[in-house]
Length: 290
Image (cartoon, rainbow, N blue to C red; front, side, top):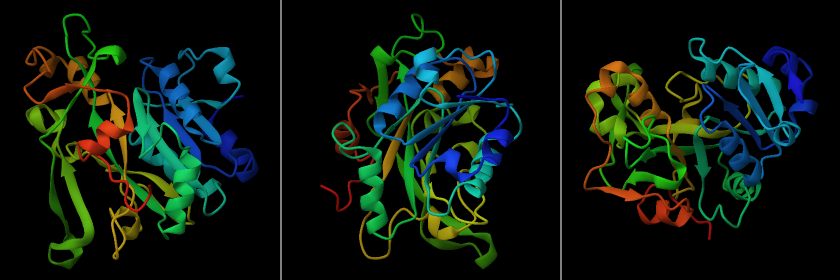
């Protein structure tokens, strides 16, 4: 179904948005749009919304299964603004997920369980949000794949990830309870090309809608409990978003394109497109879900 604007879709209310879980995908360019949409349709989202320019090509059979919305995807803070607006329009308690094109959500045992099953369990644990770690994907050979995108030859970093305490400026810079800033991947290895506010790889990518909730450009929420990685009593599920987005940006930017000959290093391993690899590398947490 096509919509002329995001406002026109949201004006039709929660009934059109659906009960969820809802996936909001913002297509910044035409790279791997179809594979991104297909991945999330297969994950079991009840509603998929794609914000994109008119020039983006989506196969007709796939477009019939989602809401395609004409949108200015390059406006300042386009994703944060869209997520905040969707939160306001959705029925309270609706699970919402958001990502960009050429990004792929993985969660523990996602090959055999749907995103709805996973979020049902997470809700039963009295959690209203889930942290996802953005794991960089990149082509092993940039001569053959100059845009750094190659699904059949994708690599990830097997190590080099770390976390620092997240400080609260309103409380004399004391560490926030159960909140950390996570780093690693291409944003860490090539940090000289990445603005400091964009170096984090954690993203509160799944959350339950709630009146008044606002998403910041850093992908954290106005409700601080939504930004915690676990509840106070035990570890909780986390997810991973495997993403070509940073690699694409580093190759598109003239300043970094000619400085970076290869993204491959001694800690690069082929990406297996399987949740078990991500759990084995410690890039997501199954918590109490087995």
